[in-house]
Amino acid sequence: MRGANITNNIYICSQKVGGCHGPSRPLSSSVPADESIEGKLVPNKKHGILVIQATELKCGGMVVACTFDHRIADAYSANMFLVSWAKMANSKSPLTEVPSFNRSLLNPRRPSQIHPSLNDMYIPVTSLPPGPPKMEINDHEDHLASRIYYVTAEQLIKLQALASSNGCKRSKLESFCAFLWKMVARSETGNDVKKLCKMGIVVDGRSRLADKNDLMASYFGNVLSIPFGGKKIQELNEKSLNWVADEVHEFLECVLTKEHFLGLIDWVEAHRPVPGLAKMYCNGSEEGATFVVSSGQRFPVSKVDFGWGAPVFGSYHFPWGGSSGYVMPMPSPAGNGDWVVYMHMLTGQLEVIEKEASHVFKPLTFGYLIQLNFVTVMY
Image 1 (cartoon, rainbow, N blue to C red):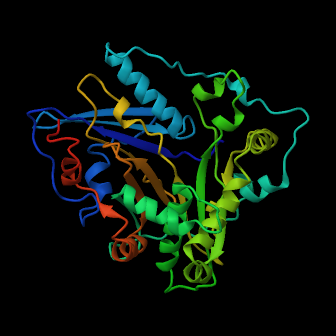
Image 2: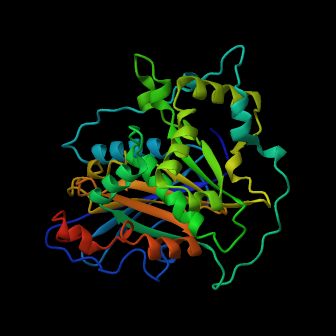
Image 3: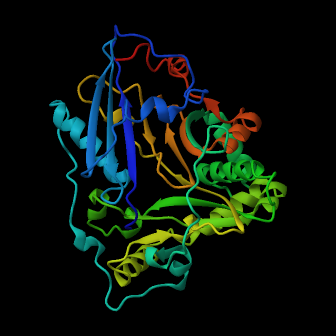
């Protein structure tokens, strides 16, 4: 619930009838998304906890971007801020949800009750082994890069059917994560296939900690846990999708309880003032690729209306300085069941995904939005 100085970014593109058409170039093209966004459309945070930048385009369009300190707020909190800000700016939309800063909602128990599994998931930063020396990376080496894709509702249903077996229906998120885990493992076949490939999934604890008064629903801060699984690359490549989905379900199931989050609060308190880190980020020499999937299905793009109409597009942008990948699936602004997927992954992993899973991950273009009759112009 507390961690390193990591920033997260959100940007919203607004529309206006009579404006100009957006580019047809996909956001997964050879032009690096990080270079075309960071410091240009998305502000760099030099100090403080929040930076906002509004960029007006020549055609009358506007991009509103926020960079916030992840130690202060998680994505759920950032969503509340964006919706509240838009409603305050738009007099037609009254403010209906007031954020709660009541930290007593996360008070530890006396006596504390820390399940041993939490020590397998988290580690105090003072207990971390020394990391390898930082090496300079040239343009030809594998490095982290950002891409944005979309996955159709039809493909999500197909993945869910393939990932479900023996009468056990897996969720779309579990099915998506299982498929992506296999793809990342496939990109590692040139390395030692005995190494572990680890995947974590961010879980919001608000609904698990909510009492009858439901104060947690408006809690502003960090209420997250990151369960993860680690499997050998060879095993992920050889096993079926439904087997991998079962593994995803197994490590997720253990944290979807109130007791897990109460125990995590106790764990954080027991280690104060030392920050904690999810162990999945602690890669040893025997481990391979690591990435996290953070569900953005509650990203309220359509509700961020400053009075100009619903946005054309919105996305998270998470180019943190770590070596692990980050994936954020979000609902399509069209509301048709498609997903928009932001990825910050190694270029070698992205190449495999685009080559072998192009039927699932399609480059997001402005043309995609036009075809859905969601927008005809940007502003």
